[in-house]
Length: 152
Image (cartoon, rainbow, N blue to C red; front, side, top):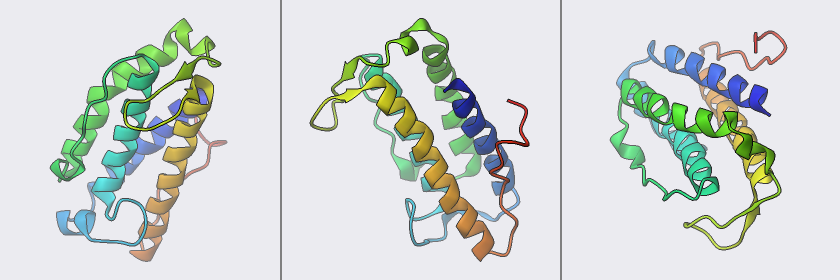
């Protein structure tokens, strides 16, 4: 499972680099799907990842104002800020307890840790697909989604 998180982070980093070639207007342009624009969608991916990992650890959720991340640099800083916290959890032995149940503070019901981790992987891949569609609509080659060609 860690290899898939590493895949997502590698692709995310490449999308940050890709975004630097666009104007701020293009990054904020309202689009169909996702969270409405490129910056909000990337910040949302990070927010969801951090929120669920914190819930698994029994830590309080941190409310992220997606609109506050209005440059690619701010979104990348957000990613870097929470990356070590997520990595620390994933590298701990706690990941082996994937049958444990979690009650997130922001919703009803309980969920298995392992199911949450698999959801996080799929969630990011889903939104990266949306970025790829938007990229093609702009006539720009998207970041490669190939897992086979990556050194993980």
